[in-house]
Image 1 (cartoon, one colour):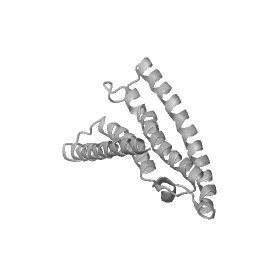
Image 2 (cartoon, rainbow, N blue to C red):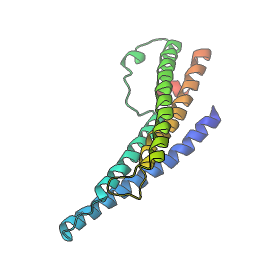
Image 3 (cartoon, rainbow, N blue to C red):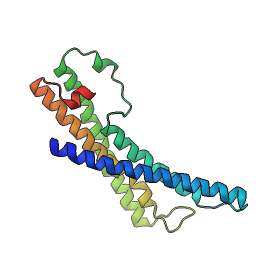
Image 4 (cartoon, rainbow, N blue to C red):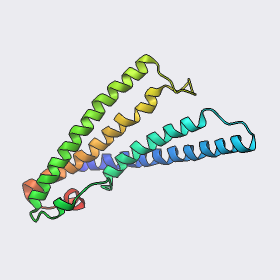
Length: 173
């Protein structure tokens, strides 16, 4: 459990750096587009599309970090009202299992889609040098990191269910 937690911490630090890089690139591209359009009277044909791809990556990386920090949107109204710690851990264990199942579908099908996109050689509309498989790779890759984060919570909920003690994972939810 501790090894998984340390691994997730390291991965999520890297993901945060990746998000910052994506946002910096977006700002630079949009600023460049504004300068070219209004100051030089010659709009770039590719900057808006590339900025949206950076936004795509930042969104999915951010979703993974949100899972890690336990700030992803959730409805805890009913779970918070369950008086038993073990019953709460059981309900959260079911929720974690559903998340893992959903993320597993995203991982498997996402990598299959990426493989097909690479196989068919699809490229971005205004940037023929950018394979669309790299853009689509954000979904399954971020889903892998999300699944690792959910797995850490799931292990904590199992521990709480067995021992009855609230650990970090259960107390944080």
